[in-house]
Amino acid sequence: MRGSITSNETINFNDKIESDNISWGIIDKIDTQKQIMSVLLPSKPRAKPQSVNVPIGNAVTNYGAGFRLIPFSGGRTAVYLFEDTGGKYHHMGYVLDNLKNITDDVTGESQDNANRVLIRHLEEGEAQMSGAYGNEFFLSVDGSALVKTQFGSYLKLDNYMSRLEGNFSNLKYEMDGVRLRMGNVIRPTRPDTTEDQFIVKGADDIIKSSDQLVEGETWTPLKEFTVQVGTVQDPLSKYTDYVNPLLSPTIGTFSIADTYIKEDGTGLYSGGSLVQAYLRMFNGGGFMITEDGSFSIMDYTNWSSIKFPTINPERSMRLRGSLVSVAESSDTEAKFKTEILMNHESGAQIEVREGYVQLTEATGRYVKLDNFGFNITVPDAAVSINAKDIQLSVDGGSVSIGGMPTDGVLKATQTSLMFDTHTHAGPVGPPLPTFQWTPFLQVPNSPFVAQSFKVG
Image (cartoon, rainbow, N blue to C red):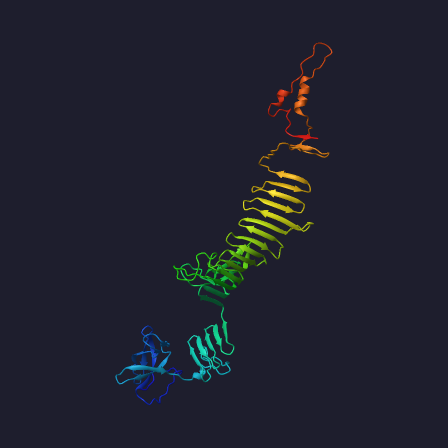
């Protein structure tokens, strides 16, 4: 059974085979489920090659234990076969020649002249299991163990240093109730799958998953170190995740990142700034540090906080929608730089700034006390003062009521009584009755009733 069925010069084999029961052939097709290959065997010169079905000779048992390798088909792999006395063929090994062309040298600097990744140079006693795509398991002469991927990510157990060493873009590690994430941020953003997506910052500075990027859009990867303690199993998706990421896990979450990314793939903001350091316990306590340097002691249950910024020296305390803030004034000409602001969640506000105090209600009406006096502004409402006695004390000034006060004020009751009772003695004839003011005081819009007046 000697001969040739190919002109491919890369396949050379030994014509000095001593036994006629050993032959070689080229793999034409493979049934990967049955692990059977169809091998073309050389026949007589210029005759059609014989095709035989041969089980792939892997070191694996019928119950799955062992090692398997599925070779390439389509004429890219040659194999040695043994024919037993019953005419059945058995896979013995692979036809190999010029291995130096695909094996690296001891320096690790050989050039790839076979258009493929060079396989590792092995010292005596070393072992390697490699795939056709550059991935491998390697047991070195120094007792270390290496697992490496095609693109260079690896995990190494260093024997001498007793160290676990790794190089990869991101890590997601699930332990019993503990989840650890490091490196590039990834999250399972698709509700119909557990597949993770990279979370990035797009050209528009919007946090999004990688599958939301438009073609040609530039983006920046986000980095994180996140540990979650008390993770729970979702009984529906069979995936360790949470329905409400702000209330889970059952113990707490700590993260340092470009921005903290919740389990649904969205970023967390505080006061319009991205949160870069985040601690949240299940009981609601924790803290946040934002990209502008603000530090907030948090009550996540009520979403309340005490805030300590570093850029603008503001100190604030928040309780739900209400806020008390002590901050530096933005007025560069102010003599006193501190201002105090109290905002209630209803919209009411109290301000204490340089030289004045102002109380403002939700619709904008306010009372202001400043260097110029006391001002009540309620343009569409009434002012009501209820008291037993009201006393207005004016030191050398006046009291004005109305928009354009020009007339002085007489006491109407006493003046009308004096006017109504006085008489004129004419030069001749009996006295005439005087004109009566009192009835005109009761007439609405009477010219005798002032719409504006001044006292003093």
